[in-house]
Length: 453
Image 1 (cartoon, rainbow, N blue to C red):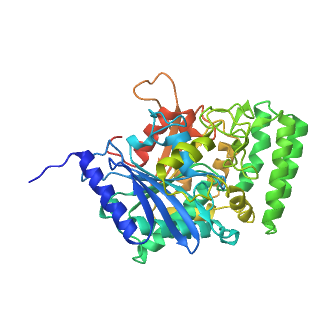
Image 2: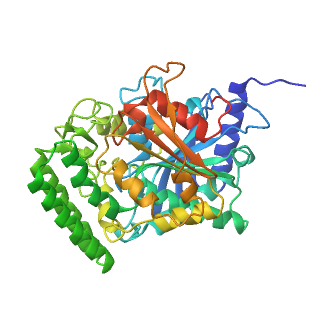
Image 3: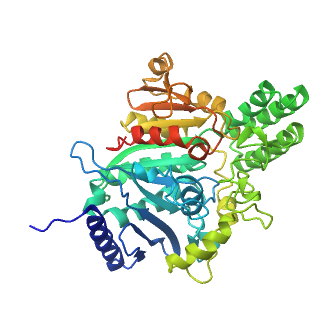
């Protein structure tokens, strides 16, 4: 009987996978050592979604603990998971294309997508094909997962965990429900392990009401700024109640301006800093660090080094070899946000409740000093859940978190009950994996039940 090394098995897996995908008419490629595969799926006629899958070199085969896969969904909307999530946050290489010590590949295989179509390397051939709702985005992603999973028995045995950041959280909960429906109908061969919401834009109303009080408590704005902030938040609340979602999006943008003016340009991703002074790994594009109207897929010429746009449109594009000549990484991202403007301020609390009621494991994690999706706002929407375990959960104590065996410095707190868990990550802002990589990696291992946890 011939024995294969883990590297050989990964190579055979990707080789067979790429062949299966190609036989269905999709464009795909992979690395010569079999550790990576990537390609395009035409999720709708003339709407092309790009994906990139990494197989972990640390894979451990344990029957009681199947090796997990993490699907990473970026925010924006319009931010590139293949770019930002991969190279700026959790992938095997950083923006300088050097190995990342804290890559989540240590705990799971990683699947990055540029979603919705028009994000990153994904593209549409007609601007009318941009998705207009989170549900439409979930439908496209489910189509992609069918194409990838239904031809691969190895992936089918690997539970999929949907991890999201920022606006990606709204995509994640709608995708989770779409996946469950497709599985139930026998259309998708996949095991859903859970959904994890990192600093996620689940309830815009609760977040806009949190901004003023949080900044006032840390002396970043005064009473005048607080009153103006609260008044605009009340206006947004009324617009949402009246179903005027695009108007609420415009008022939200006005509120960002009020906060910036009265805080001397606080960093919305870390309220301890001024705008533009965040972690170097994320500050790949100065203008890209803004949320929403200035989505972080927009590339600025004055960007700090390293310039992720130059990396993606240079050496990465050259490596991939399947990006159409007329497509620039992030070139359609502005259209992605504009098309979703009517859905941007809609809450997705009901979807979280539905996932919990269906028994799906839901994890929420939040950076302590994030402002845009502040912990105060996250706790507010959690308190609105109709989940039958909420009252018990809220009365439980928290467990402190540390980095490795060093228990001299508290890195966070954790609380869970039944299929819901919350991680408070101290010292982190919006980009938790970047600002607290050690405790984040341990958290991920626990959430996905990794054999390497």
